[in-house]
Length: 438
Image 1 (cartoon, rainbow, N blue to C red):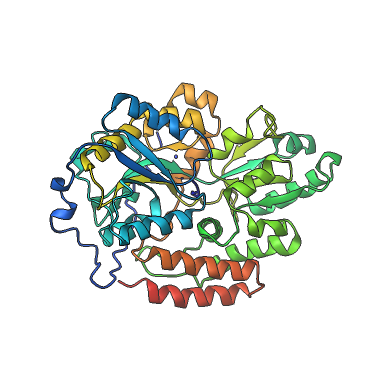
Image 2 (image 1 turned 45 degrees about the vertical axis):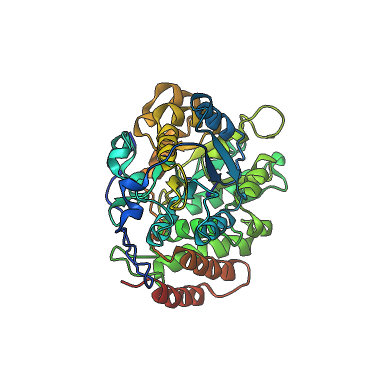
């Protein structure tokens, strides 16, 4: 479930708020109106068994969380409906289920950027804020991801910020520190790769396959160079010198070999495995990697040999895309009263603490970032906090599926197919102007 995933996605409440811009793009009759009884409190009725549609659980911990609920609610059990690992495939199945008005999925584990689309099309149910008792204790920025037109349609369960994983053992031997800029990272690679232990290792990778992870990595490169995809007024503004500098940093990485050619096929898991197998010096990925890379059961070759830092940028620390996952209730689900209670159970401080301990995924409960037990066990919480404090959302638009597809095409054409980055951005600007309207 990454990007996040599928795969999100991170106290932090201090100054994080700043309302995110809600782009109220309309699409025909699906204008986002939540009027009528379909979205109100009256819809949250019915008790009994429910299903939970979620991306593939690579941690193995989710069944334990659900089992904790089931043991306390024997007549309202939750059945996990595991969807593919790929976030785009998850979204597609959820959309198809909604378009068929099927009750097969009760609670949806959604990427934070899907809320506007699902709410505007009335595929998910509005949740009155008084039905979520701990909402005010969650990171404000994560709560905004769960809203559409100032109304709550989901509850934030995990947040996410991109992190830079690095081989601390090799950097220490080479006498270099964790980089703060792209140039510092490339210079560090040259020094480390001169070591016998680093022979054959590549410098850096992220997620560059043509899927949602590419939208994330592209957005981070653009934002870290001072550019934007959508400006503060909600208008596309990607054909700029700053955006060009960000995209060129990625294309230069591929052309020089600093980013291995294989990285154009990497999603979260492929890139994680490459790092754990000792093939990469630096990796951009989400917090979940920390627990898996640190395993001492033989599955990771780098346990105890890596560190975590904020993402690098052009002139200083970079800008992460705001990731994470929100739980929403399908408009067509049965037993919605049970669904609300299950969501509140999973969003509770107790469950979120258990989740970070079991998976290293970022919580949305602000106090957990200052929990002494957690900060001792998970040193990455400090750079993660910094990542989230400076994170920027991907475009929050009703036609998000079309927007992210356009971004992925432009980025992939430049990285894989050799299209001139300036041309790719110019064409993307034109395409986004047709998709994002005021």
